[in-house]
Image: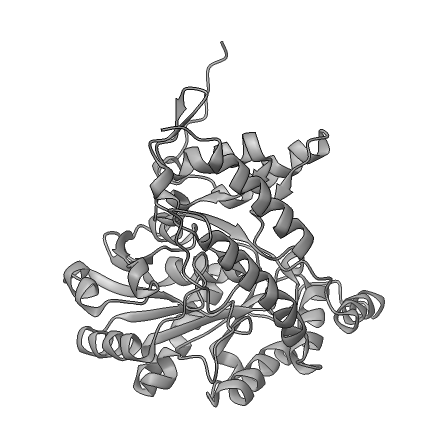
Length: 403
């Protein structure tokens, strides 16, 4: 047995790899090996990037935009981000208050590296996106999980939030619409959060990556609309991955107080430097060009969502909050925990998700990865035919359980 000479840092030993990416990779490997896998684990739109955006990326290469850019992104793109914020929300930002980064995940990583000290606590409502707690840990912070109630459609509960806050609380995460539940935080809940944040000086980190994929009537509630006075203690994260089907282009952006953005630029300058130049010009075309593409996706997603939720709720013992945004359903399968298949007991969401993959050939993500073990996440960013076939397999698999 070979001896591992290089020891690993404690911080990396505390952090698990991304379970969603691992499950997606496993599903793809099984499919490549000839298995008839239906993959509901992937978190990206099943649309091609709009043609005019692709052409802009190609043109950037042809025009020689293949070298380093300014660390926080090309000025034109940062100006376009400011323009979008103004037109879409009425918010006023300057280009110096914008950082363009290598995808939304990178932006969040920069935020926490720039503002957390060892022991600082960050409130994270659960269910949460899988990468939030590890990113806080990698920056030396302490993730404090705030459980949300399915019976309240996973809305923020101010009373629960208050019990989790301490004098070490430095920030709170907001993700609305949410991955994995698709839930949207109410104006009432956001007002309560705003009051606490103003009173205690918390930083608000709001991940708005799904803001264009919503099914609500009227304007989506947002913390900066509820309380504009929070502008100087709020950092907004967004990007083009979900809104323009550009997951592989790796462009995200953040807006926030100038001193924090400068600190994030310092972090980025010593890590990735600038985001890929051609991708920045493609994102520029996305933000300044026609804005109808998200609506095209929503029209495709809506009937899929409605079918998925209705079919899940037709299963005895299964409940599912109707998502108000994003492209996921997050059903509760805990009524089936304790049942068995061929003598093997299903104890939790990891067992349930593994059972679906092994017996139904359906790839999903266990809720424990999102901090909520009663649930399993499925993406409906796939065709209606695949969803219908997948639901048939899931029902058959559940019916085969004993006990």
